[in-house]
Length: 598
Image (cartoon, rainbow, N blue to C red; front, side):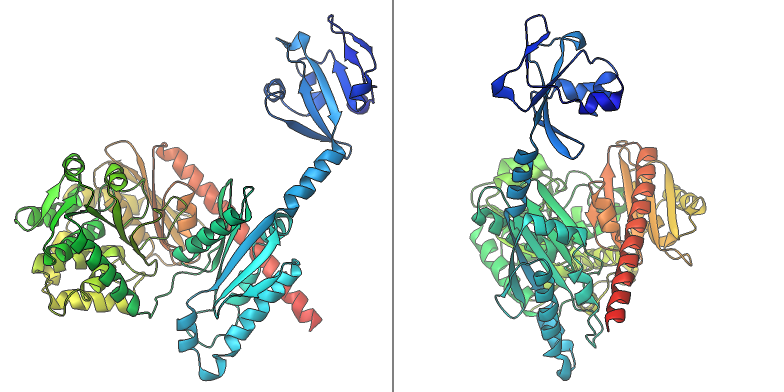
C-alpha cells in the first residue's frame, strides 16, 4: 500500500484487543482512526513527525494537518517499544478552528506615544506646530482603522488602541508600517517625528494586558523610541527602532531627579555605589561622581568593586591612594548593608551585569543612573531611575545632576578628571553620541579642575596591548558590503578595552558601515565589541547574543567559543541586511502604490 494512500485511508472507528488487533467499531470514538504496525522510518512517513516526538505525544497535545483537516495524534500508553505502538488520529478540525478563533479574538491593548513631543513642537516652525500633530493623529487613526481597531486620544501626545491578537498578527506582519509613515512626515526640523508603541496581551485578564502594555511602552521609550514593543505571557518582542536617540532639551528633569536623590540620600544611613562587572572608565568615573555627591551630603559612601581591568589602573590607584573613597569588595558590602542603606547603580540597568547582584536584592532602596537602552530584564520599581539613552555616558548624566545639588562646585580635581575620562571613552573622544549637553557637561568638569593632559595619561596602554590592537586592525576582514570583522589574539584582562578601540579604529576606514571585533578574556569568555555609523542597529544584534548597548555602539559577552560566535554574528548580519532589504522594497512598493493612486 503506498504511503499517500496510508495517510488518507479513512479506517472506521475501532478498538484494539489485548493482542493488538483491531476488533471492531466503537461508537464513542466515531472520529478516531487507528493505524497499526508502523515502526522505524514509517513513523515519519505516516505522521510527518519524528519517533522521539511521537513517543511524547501523550504528554503534550500534538496536532497535525493532513489534506486541509486537523488531527489530534496520540499512542497507546502501554506501548514500551516500536512493535507495541498503536497510533490514534482524532479529527479535530472544528475544535482547532474554534480554538484558533478564540485565540485570535483575545484582547490586546496598545499605548501609543509621540516621541519628544515638547521638543518637536518647540523646534518646528510656527506654521508646522499644528500641522505635525494633526498629521501624526491622522496616520495613527488611519492605521488603527485599517485593522478595525479603535484609537482613542488620551492627551496631546498619547493614544490608546484596543485590538485583538488576530489583528495584532497583521500589524506584526506589516512590521508596524505606521512607524515608517510617521517618520516620513516633513517636520521642517533637524530630527524626524516618531512614535513609540507598547502592546500587551495576556491570557489572565484585561488588567494584566493593560499592565503589560504600560511596561511595553516604557521599554520602547527607554530604548530610544521609534519602535513597537509587544509583551505577552510568553515574552517580549521588538519591532522597528531604526532611529538613534535624539538629545532632549528638557532641562528640568535633571533638577527633579537631583531633588529626589537628595531626599533618598539624606534618609539613608549609608550609601553603596556600584557599576557593572569589570568596570570601564565610564562606570568608574560615574561611581566616583555619585560618591562625591553623597560625601557632599555627609553620608558614609562605599564604592563596590571586586576586580578591574589594567586600563583602570592609573585612575584607580590615584583614587585608592587617597582617604576620600572607600572602595570595598562585594563580601564586605553584603555584611555592612542595613534596612536603611541606599544603593546607587551606575552605567548599567540589568541585574545580570551589576558588580554584586545580591547587594541589589538586599538593599530596599535603589537609584539607577544609566545611558544604556532598557531591556526586558532591566531593573523594575527603582526609587529613582534616570535612564537616558541619548546621553553619551553615565558620567555625563552625573555631571548634569551634580550641578543641581549646590550652586558651589564641590568636586575635586580627580573626580572631575575621572568623569571627563568616562565621557571621552564612551563618546570615542567626542565623535559619537555627542550632543550639546555632552560638551556642556565636559565644560563644567573642565571648570571643576579637570586637566586634559592628565586625562590623556589614563588612556595609555601597555606595549603588549598596543601590539595586539595593531595586529587585529592589520588582519581585519572587510566584506564587500562594508562590514569589518576582526579578532584580537591571545587572552587579556584588557580584551574589552582593546576590542572597543579596534572597532572604533575600523570605523574610520572609508566605506565601513559596521565593525565587529571579538576576543577572549583571561576567563575564556568571548567578548564582542560592535560599532556602526547608523546603517546597522548593532544593539539589536548584540541583544541576540545576550548583550546590549546603543544603536551605533554595543557589546556582548558569552561563554561560547570565539569561532562559533563569529560565525553566528556573520549570519545575524546577513539576516539583518536581508530583512532591511525586504522592508526597503516593501516600503518602495507602498510608495509607488500611493503615487499611482494620486
